[in-house]
Length: 489
Image 1 (tube, rainbow, N blue to C red):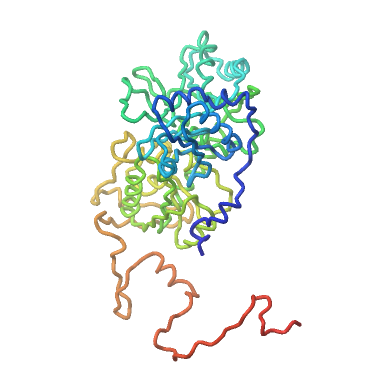
Image 2: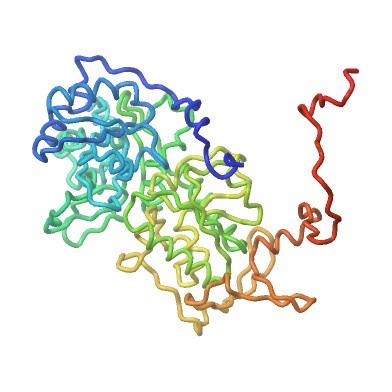
């Protein structure tokens, strides 16, 4: 029963840690993991206990990196190799349980601000980039030297963007270079003027310019990747970038480019389908996909109010990493919404593995908020913090007397007319609603009870007080395939 709702300890010990990566040669360890910079970060803080967080593909180097840092700094290192949710998020809770005074995050990161203040340093990696090949690829795809183009990259190639821009600027006049949006250190002030922060990156726009004017040239990916759609960072960019602007990706090893317009169209079509599924849903499961990212409690309360305003019922489920076996225990739920970091919400899911679709918070907002702009005009927000009050993208719910709640709506999946939702005050708890039964008994109305009552088999009946009391007797012994009282034949 335990494995149905949570992963048992035995499964965690027997599980393979993903695809093992190649071990880094010891002479290259300092360069690849930037150990000199990390050691300086630890010395400046005077930390005695430091947590080192590695993704699965880098765990092979974890022991060597920890030993090298202990030797150079004299501090005690703790390796965090199995996070509760995603390896891209900072495991601040795990670091605090180890008594760590700082956290070093290695590998790809979502760069989401942590929920608790803790000094954090990021080591994104430094993948080699063939600059001359990337320059030729850029020139082939952008013949107009005056066209505005933004340079983007995967996290491990971010170190090469400025060098790439230096080679391109003599000819191209309107280049915008992105940089990783690292969370600000504890107690520091925001820079002035503050650059635009989107997609986990900073964009230093000139006054009067907007990001929607720029095309995109993305350096990253690999030709050996079996399915490029499995990259959540690239999916985040394709979904959020202006649909009318060109978007090209370039392999940093070979310089081979690809027009990502068709892939972006498939991703947007898939997201619009999920919005329709959310509009048809009566019961929504809110999956707590992170506990270490800032404002996750406020976002959860916002989604609960959103579903209640749309006349839907919601469950809040804290199950760790979602798996088909865990979510199959809630057949009354029509759709699930994963409240996670931007990369976790877009993490790839095997087709057909989940019996109900899993949505991002932005798709639930588009389905339940009638004031949300229609498709094509509304931005696809990959971080749930953009939906909250105070964000420039926040769209408040219309008042209950607004005509937007009465607008006729037809399901594009079933073809049925959706009834207008009944406004329910956020102060009224849905679990307190009482529904009269024909026998004049009162019982709590819940989606689970309604779903159970519609099933032909509802489990064993207790029949308290209706069966005679008998003494306990010895039952059958053995296993189901061969009980002791059964013959051998």
